[in-house]
Length: 78
Image 1 (cartoon, one colour):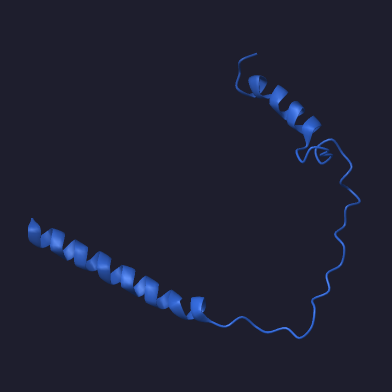
Image 2 (image 1 turned 135 degrees about the vertical axis):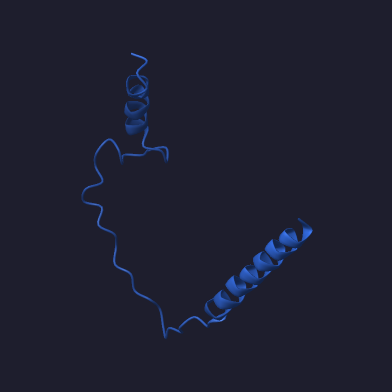
C-alpha cells in the first residue's frame, strides 16, 4: 500500500512541476511596449435606458425589484 501511495505522490509532484514549468515562459514574457497614449472611443450607451440598466444608486433598482418579485413564482411557491 505504501508503494502505491509513494508512486501516486511522485506522479502528482511530477505533473505539478511540469504544469508550473510549462506556464512559466508565458508568465515571464514581457508585455508589448506602446509608444504614446492609447486612444479609446467612448462606449455606446444608446440602449442603456431601460429598467434593467437605470441605476441611480449603482444598482439597477427597478430591475432588481422586478427580478426578486418573480423568484417565488420560479421556485413554485405561488
